[in-house]
Image (cartoon, rainbow, N blue to C red; front, top):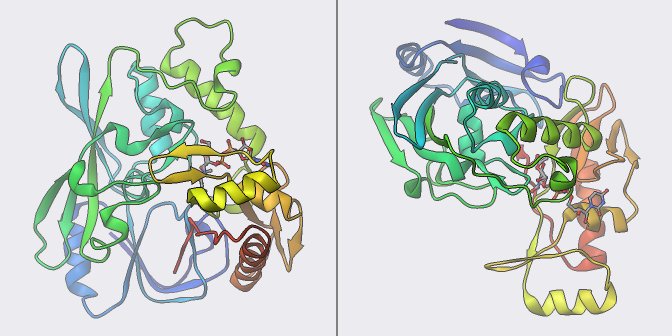
Length: 333
Ligand code: EPU
């Protein structure tokens, strides 16, 4: 167990802001976590993984808790599937790399997304037509008031687009300690998103590793490398709008891209932001990423205020022009 006081969080979240926590603690087992919870019972708490989807808006006057539980093991196996349990602190991409090397299908489209297993299951990360919930069998948690283990099956996690029970009612009540993934020994491929299929042209039955490499190549073209530019991936969610607004906008902007979903039309926020002229625009020391305007980057030494202001200006201009209220994907702390 590690406990540090008045600790800089710069290296513990991908925006790389120089903010501080009153306490920062890392636990290597559930027993250590329980000990920390007893010891710091009176402190506000913030659980972080790699900090790749959050923005510290200032110093954190409480304890930031980080899981260093990083093991993964197969629990069960049939002719077609393997049930893997991965602990919360394992990097999602390390898990996916191992699964691809074992020829197991299911999570390869989520390659190269920063973040740890626990946070991935809170956020329901998604990319290239796959969401992590598609492979989640169940989620193991610690009840923060009783210190008992509770296992949630996938349905109980109430997954939605970048959403789950753990972001809403479960927040502050349960912390994820491990996730059980059901992955396939036989090919289950999702290659329909964007140019993924064309990147794999000529390969008849791509292996999980080949899909993984194609996804990594696409992500590297579009998204900033987290160790070069501070960011938190997509800053906003893609909005879903109702038919009347869609019809009005479509008449005005016939080229507007859209995807039909069960509750309306999903419009790429990147397109809305680009139309408002934000690509490569700067506010303070924060910039809208040229190749993917859904991403805000820290130019180096940005403050939370720089990022908050830029995000607000983008939200206001999209609202003014399209009457769409962008919802942020990044969590403010
Ligand atoms: N687009 C533009 N201009 C641009 C870039 C994109 O107009 O400069 C439009 C295009 O119409 C394009 C569409 O946006 O077809 C979609 O772009 P992209 O495929 O890059 O995906 P996205 O919808 O912008 C989502 C996720 C990403 C995920 C990609 C790929 C959200 C909020 N973001 O982005 O997830 O990697 O799809 O599946 O749903 C993240 O959550 O942090 C993240 C990076």
